[in-house]
Amino acid sequence: MISETNIFPISNLNELSTTYRSYRVRGLNSSSIDYHKNRSHIVGRLSRLLKQPVEMFEEDDELRLGVPADADPIPDSLIVTRASVRFDELSGTRVLDYGARTPSTDRLCTRFIDFMVQAPLRSRYSLWQPGAGSAYYEKSPIGGDGPIGRHEGFSVRAMITADGGIGLCVDSRSCFIERRPLRHMTRNDFRRIRGRHADLSHGPRMVRHRIVRAA
Image (tube, rainbow, N blue to C red; front, side, top):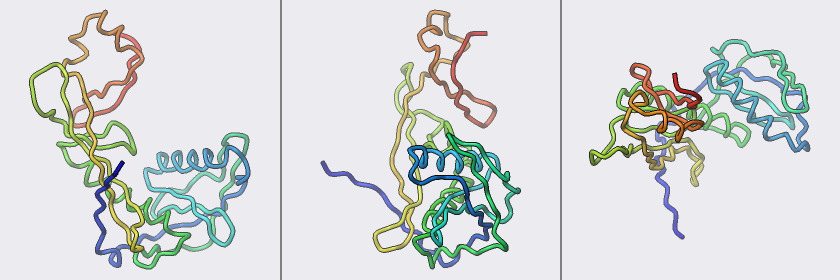
């Protein structure tokens, strides 16, 4: 089976830079079965808290955390699965050079670029995103007047390319959504979808909710 992916190289990497703070991460045991889950939890939680990109990376045989210099301070510690993790801020700030990367900063580069891409996409009124990190879809369905609408979309993420650069990997996506608003459903209809998720309009934004009960 042949799989194809669209990767668009970023040609102006030498013009990009990010100033960031670095923290030494203490308390995560790399041999623990919870290690990778805890890493993902920390990155996700701090990213949501700061509304900024956060990433862990290895440097000088230590696990470290990179945070943009203009972000708010992070907590001194976090409780994760079977561990308590502490963050010790290292002195000064550092400049991330996207055109002169090292293996230890690759994760920082792709994470920070992912965040750069989000802002212009979120500002497009014609697009909606069900949740953080998920694909973007056109608000208007395509084709037909039936009860189910098909919405075309795409996911995008930064990745290291074969020639050592950084590119944006864009994959096509689609989803199917019932056109009929929830308020027009009968109680029998509602029982059929209870416990599932629905994307509801909040002004210009579409937000995903779990359907629990009828009002």
